[in-house]
Image 1: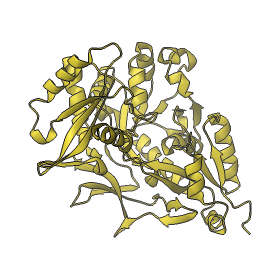
Image 2: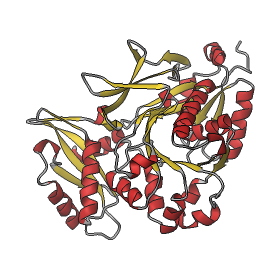
Image 3: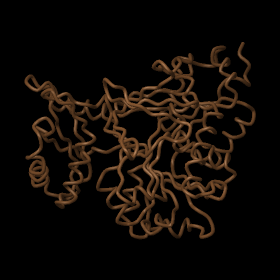
Image 4: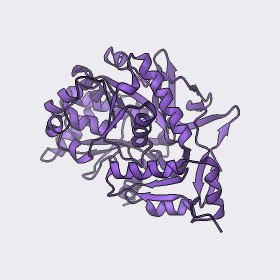
Amino acid sequence: MADPSRVPLLFELARADPATAAAQLEQAWAQQRLVALAGPGQQGDLDQALGGASGEMAALARFGAAVVVGSGGSAGERHWCLQPLAHLQASAEATAVWLAAAGLEPAHCLHLNPLPLHHVSGLLPLVRARHWGGELRWLAPSLLRRPDDLPQACPLPRDRPVLLSLVPTQLARLLASPEATAWLAGCAVIWVGGAGLPAPLAAAARRAGLPLAPCYGATETAAMVCALPPQRFLEGAAGCGHPLADVALRLDGATGAVEVRCSRLSPGRLVSGQLLPLPLQPGGWWRSGDAGLLGSEGLEVLGRLDGALHSGGETVFPERLEERLQEQAACAGVGHDALLLLARPDPEWGQQLVALVRPRQGGDWAVLLRDLQGLTAAWPPAERPRHWHLCPTLAPTAAGKWERGRWQSWLDSLEAF
């Protein structure tokens, strides 16, 4: 029979106060426990991944203090990754080296965290603050939905640097408020990750002088593996910067997939109570699902390989085209609330792009579609959406990620009639 003290603790964090949940998590880690973190609506999936309190699960005690958190790509497939606390601490140490290179003393920083604990991006601020000896302050997600109130509710200290982690959706919401924008300008570093940073949003942040540090990482890599220094961002550099001190990056020659090698890769994914080792390439390289380029400024992510199209012999990355269209629309004053490009089979081209658009409330949708189509009229044929559909419910997740599999199913069902 499994030792109850070795069986994973499961925290369902749908309504949990983050400070209370963090205290419970740290208490469990102090007892060398494995903790599984479920977000809203995820408990059933996590239960299935854990497979019950079996002897196999209890055997994971060899990892000591550890966590199981979900990792999901844009295709919607969720993996439950195990990460030992030692790996999270190694990630924090690499980030400390990056900060020191930027002239900041990690232990002297205040880390603000509006991200949920069941995401690795929300877990790492806690680990960083504890590992560095710095202070962590939680920001309620509801506060970010009232950006005008943010400066008064959370005044920034003048005697120490402030670090903030955001996803692009949160950044866009704050930039819409002059009060919140001025508040953001008081931070020393604003890491932005979890999804691609749209070009219009990056341009708006530069105009406001915000110290953004676009970054790239995954649950499997214990969060951030590269980050662009704020000064380079403000000078106009694109991409996610060079790898951190403990990370090596390369691209797969056949697919262009970003590959990572570091000592903090996840030991594996949990499936029905069994730990399946992370699939690695020879030499210990983990292949992500993202295509990228490596240039003078480091890594530039092109988009998800599982979302890439093959149209007329060309490989097309919808995310890049979405950024281009968003930028052109912003310059032309073509307003809309959301835009997503997906693929449909085509007998001649193999696949062709289809656009889903959520118009602004009260807007003239016919004019909107006409204007958007006009912006793409001169695009190469393989990159030009051939059909346009209004989708009033179109929206990314709260973390700013697009569940492309979900919206592909919506499109497929729409065009089946």
